[in-house]
Amino acid sequence: MDSTIKKAASEILSGQALLVTAGAGMGVDSGLPDFRGEEGFWKAYPPYAKMGIRFEEMANPYWFQQDPNLAWGFYGHRLSLYRNTVPHAGFGLLRKWSQRMPHGMFVYTTNVDGQFQRSGFEETRVVETHGSIHHLQCIKQCGIGIFSADGIEIDIDKETMRSRGPMPICPRCGGLARPNILMFNDWNWDEARTESQQWRFEDWIRSIPGRLVVIECGAGVALPRIRRVSEEISRRYQATLIRINPRDCDVPDRQISIAMDSLAALQSIDAILDGESQTP
Image (tube, rainbow, N blue to C red; front, side):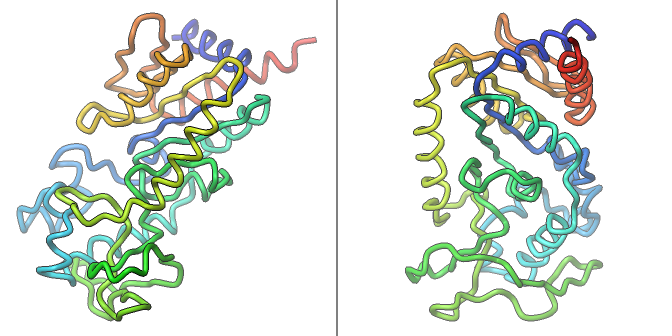
């Protein structure tokens, strides 16, 4: 493992641009729950275990039509959780490394928690491909578009995971609001914000004249979107892929696999980088 960490550090040192791709495992070291499998979800939310509702069933726009109090119990709790969670130190290490690179960095993530922005990453350098819980949309699709969830607080009965008080409404038509998140079986997600992020990302990556390094953190195989993006970009731009995952760490030939949690791996790489920077 020491040689792999040293190889990853060497690639970062010689890189000219950094792409961070991140799945749900990136937030686990910050204390966020792991929804991998039914047991992970039900451990985080015991009331849903009693109801026999799986994550894929709960994360569905159906509930905003059929039982809004249950829907906002779930998403309101997550909104509060993400607001109150302090991002782990690995986020800051990625920012520090990117500042050494002449062509900067971009983040590409399926996470909806806003942890990268809370860590100081520029809003214009993040793609949230599944949307963000910190933004809302109208379920009536009245034309208002996407609006901020700032100031929204949901009173939740934690025994039943149902909202007890007023739920967010659309400021234009007064209809119920929902998170601007791509859910399962979701045909009404407003993707305008994510599309704008994607356009900025594509402009950036096409402009890079030098070596690109891709660091992938916490992206599993159950929902492989991030892994596919990492591998496709690595092939297309002849970039080095550093995949960090304690379980699902297989990589294509000549790429780097680190079988560790995100924070531990990033700190190990940083220790090498610090040593290199202090070498006369």
